[in-house]
Image 1: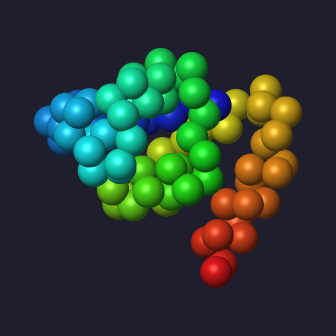
Image 2 (image 1 turned 90 degrees about the horizontal axis):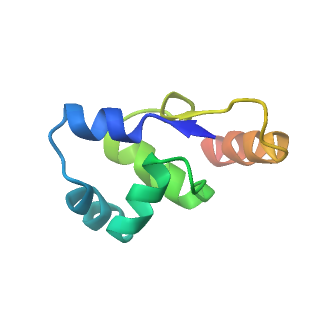
Length: 82
């Protein structure tokens, strides 16, 4: 799954460490997210989207290759409705 984290972080002049601190994760987690080596949990995706003031679907780009895409989409929709 691709994301816009690095793009948004840089445009807002936020360091990886500052973002990690705000999201209560390690800098390594931010690096892995930005490099596409780690897919965020639903909770982390939600926290990140809130941090940037965007809907989850504007932050994370589902490329159709993720075998869990339907599960993730359903969880996202459910969390938005709750």
